[in-house]
Image 1 (cartoon, helix red, strand yellow):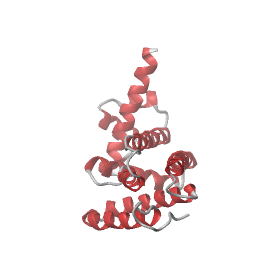
Image 2: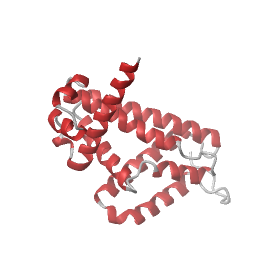
Image 3: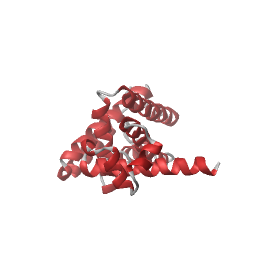
Image 4: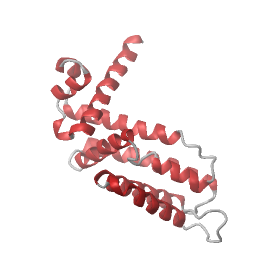
Amino acid sequence: MPRTVDRDEQRRRIGTALLRLVAERGLDEVSVRTVAAAAGCSPGAVQKYFRTKEEMLAFAAELAGERVERRMAGVDTALPPRRALRDLVLTTLPVDAERRAEAVAQLAFAVHAAHHPRLAEIRRRIDRDIRHALAAWLESTGCATGAVPVADAVIALSDGLALRMLYSPGEQARLLAALDRALDDLIPDPGTDRPPRA
């Protein structure tokens, strides 16, 4: 049993180093050698846990998805729905150094997934999991009918804003104001007389 735990820890350490490398230097810089250097181990040690570069990328993509889901799980969804939804979206946006590094890696994986079916399937599964959880929560609050389309709209909004913030970090305040405007349309504050949009 301890050997299994150690193996998982080593894989996570290597995956974390790969994510850091992607965030700092881009996906083109990822190789067994560069990941080994970033992880502080030998290329042979990396190959002990990952047979190929694609296997490393797939694991790191899973790890990145776990981080986002864990951050989302930390949001207080008992808050008023409009505020909680904003907090959920903020977990995915590059508004600080840590989330910016994750967003860079996520974008790199998304582009890579266009030509690599295994990575594409991982990305689709993460998207499905997030959409399902978000739609279930929206439905439970009663603040949106047709919760799945609203969840899809929120995810698309998040993805678009994250991309814009990566290449235009100076526009963060304006883009967050755009987020607020879009969320007002999707889930009006309880004090307004506008019904939730389907």
